[in-house]
Structures are given as structure tokens and as C-alpha cells.
Figure (cartoon, rainbow, N blue to C red):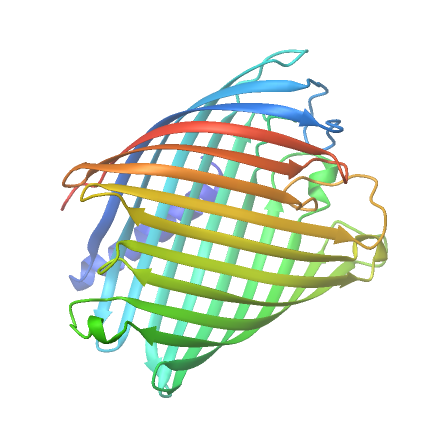
Length: 381
């Protein structure tokens, strides 16, 4: 087991022991998911890769995968204005591929995430401290066009303070620190290891349902949030004598609409724009992103989920090469899934999606079509 995974399990064991000693620990929202999927990748540009060790190429590739995952929530404390909650999510995915020239690949992906959230009332508001550990390992990672994000280890701490200043109106401030290291032994990825810090401030408004939803049992509402963020990134493995440092400003907003109780749907819309400048002018860029998520009830036991993303990133200067998903971030993604609730604690889903995203070279893209089937069991304790 890798060091990051041992740390994750150690954190869980420590928290579990603490909660058990106080007699307060509860395990909730447990889910075990098994799934299979098929993917087809097509070419639209240059696929020469500098982020994988293999030298291979093809105009199209096929992939099939099987996966299994487990997730849940541990509640250690939730009273007297204080709470301590830990969420965990672990998964494994095995791929089979076809269509490459040199050989076919069999990548295996292991991932894990542990996120704790301690909150308490403080100074008329709420203070939350949220540490997290995130790890991803990939063996036999294939070249493009079958894109799998590179493995990494990451840790972050977020401190958030929010306070209501009027009925249904709150302000918040947030500090973030993060470290992220890519695990593949490749110079192009090692150069992207980074240390980050961020400061965010925003306002959130809460709107309750109309007069017809005055029943307290009806939870219909909507929210509107605006924020501004300053981000600082340093790259310890980039720069000789002068360490690369990036500074970015971001503004954005989020709108959510929840009408599940009266009309059977919910919607979320998020958008932000970023301006990043560096002491290495080669990587100066402007970027924007729009995300849409929605769900609609199709009868008593069926639900349709929709997701869409459009991201654009423009570098001020010409780039020799890019790392997909990290430096290259021009993409359009659409995904839909129909979920059927078979019985209490058991649900099945069938989904499909399309992705068009940038490769290692600006202006070159790959496309991905996917279909998947999953079965999720949520045992009751």
C-alpha cells in the first residue's frame, strides 16, 4: 500500500477510535457500487504524448472497464453547536484496451479520498475547518487518445467562516492551502508538482419557495452566490534560480434551484472566469468555465441526471506542449444517466456521455464516447 493510502487509513482509524471512545460515532450514507463501461476514442489532431512513458499512436481506440467502489460518512459529533464529520470514498477500476499499434494496454486505477469537516458556532457565525487527503494511482497508463488523468497525491486544508448579516443573506471568507505531487516518474509531470494558497470572499442569498410552499414540510428553495478569489501557486521543480510563481484572480457565481418536493427537479448553474499571470510569462493565461447539473424525477422510481461543462483556456504566448487536464483545459463535456430505484437501498443506472478535450498541443483535440451500467447497494446499519 502506498504512503498516501496508509495515511488515509490512519486518519480514519484515529477518528474512528476517538468517536468510539466517546460513544458518538455513527456510520451513514454507505454505498457500494459496481459497474462496467465501454468507451470509444477518436482523433482530431496531434496525439504525440509527453505525459506517458509509452511511444505509441493511433487514430482511434476502444476501451472497456470494470469498477468497484465504496463510500460513506462517519459522524463523530453533532450537537451543542459543533459537528465532526468524515467522508470517505475508495475505488478501483480495471481497463482493457484495443486499437493501439505497439500493443494494447491494461491500465488499473486505484483512488481514495478522505475529507473531514469540523464546524462550530463562533462569534455569531459558523467556523469550519476541512482537511482532506486525495490519492490516485495508475499502472500501465496508455497514451492518447485513450486519456486517463495522471496519478497524484494531494492534501489540502480549508478554513471557512460564514455569518448571516440579514434574513437569508450571509457573507463568508475562506482560506485554502494545498499541496499536489504527481507520482509518475516523468519530467513533464514532475514539473507540475505545486504548492497552493488561496483567499476567497463571497456573499450568498437564500430564497424560499413561493406562498404555495409555506408548508414547513416542503423544502423548495433557491440560492444565489457570488465570490472573488485570489490564488497563488508555486512550482518547486520549475525554474533555475528563480522559482516559478503564479498569481491568479477569479470571479464567479453559482445559482441553485431545488423544486424536488413540488415539481420533482433540481438545477445548479456555476460559472467563473480566471486571469493568471506568472513570473514565467510563458504560462500567462485567461480562462472561463460554465457547468450545469440537473435532475428530474421520471415517475416514483426513476430519475434522470444531466451534466454539462464548457471550459476555455487561452495562453497569452504560444505553447510548445501542454499536459491534458492540467495545463490544457479546453473542453466540452456532456453526460446523462437514468437511475432506477429497484428497492430500498438498491439502485441501477445506465449512462452515456461525450467529451471533446484538448491534447498535448494547443488546438488539437480528442473525442470520447462512453456508455456505462452501474449497480449501487446502500446497506442500512
